[in-house]
Length: 175
Image: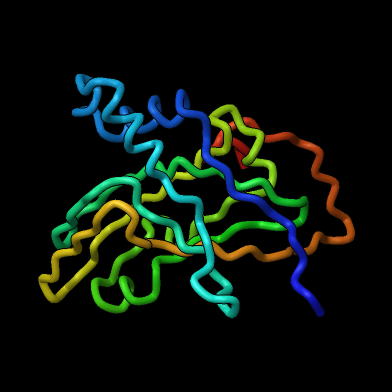
């Protein structure tokens, strides 16, 4: 059975990225617009490394270093349109998880199909922690892969009657 084409990655608008980037990294508030625009312009859309890969690699838009126990929140600059009844799930890149115990703070990131139309343009954020118990420091450069996203289809219960609509990210469904 051939793979279905059910999704598309896009950049969020520059205005959205700049706002979210400054929120995550307040030190950039005083930076000239050109520096943040250069970060935005260099963002690479996620892609699979090989034709047999299930995961789409996400690339860091900034240089960062995480000491053991440190955490960072990264605005990826990316959003994902997908057909209904599909979900995008995130996991650390296997090698980074194995070498550094790199963890997503919510263990598995979930992006629902209706997040795309959210009031923040569906901007995907990730919060990472270096959970190394071996004292290993994680250093990544701009454009390094740091997590992978995999699309999964999902089913609904026979008696499902959900009609609410989303407008927001974490906690927006109020359940």
